[in-house]
Length: 327
Image 1 (cartoon, rainbow, N blue to C red):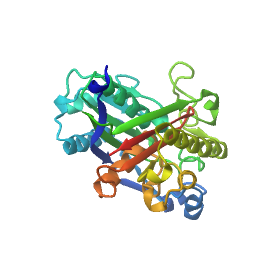
Image 2: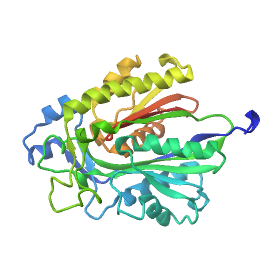
Image 3: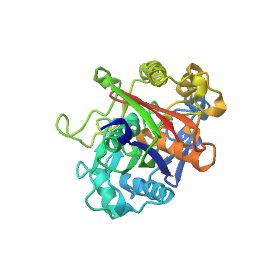
Image 4: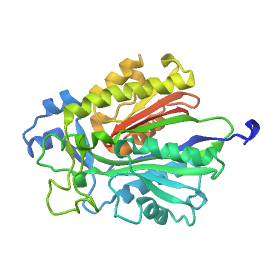
């Protein structure tokens, strides 16, 4: 492909959905030995949304996807690629992307899931961006959707206070100038046991044991690696693109912990008002967290066309990644 024929992807639609049920820190005080003050001080979280018993990940994904498609003025049947990032799929198979495709009424476009836990949306965005750059498709729907409440032990105060459910989505379309300037994704599996769910399919099939089918996390160790890794990937992204931190308009980070977000912002010398923060109201929604935050800031008018955005995330695996985007 010669220079004149290069094509890029750009974000033309965003969407988000949060379940109606809200679980506050005060509610959790009645469930486990914790306090609102303790949760706020260590995480910045005040509340989280919880899916209804009859809601699935694809239910949440559909709501976010339709919003993004509406903003993009794109009919579902015209979609050429569907990528869903999730660690809580509806079923072992088919993929949640295929279930979403069925809901939307699209027939024939490739549809598949990406599993990189909290980094899932960045990974999925990177994949869709490559499809468009390679000329294989002219548009793509990228969704991050989770029902993490299904894999939480609500008697474990170390994890149950941290997570929530939700979905966020973007529509990418081909453009002559880069919207998604580039993405950087990484992983290191040696940290498997610091953040994981013990059960699965081939190693230890899911049982009735709450412990075996719930998240386990060594919080202080995860925190240390996350802070260092996110600072590194932010620095890597800016250096690779010859961008100075002061050129950034917005940081849209993974919403896991306010202290981690603050540490990354300080590294980039960004003002608090340049950081999109939703962790206080959404908690950690894993793959949904970055697109949910992006959608909120786009729809309330903070993020404007032409502005430069750094999105970054860190998740179990460990996985991590970033995306430099001109909105």
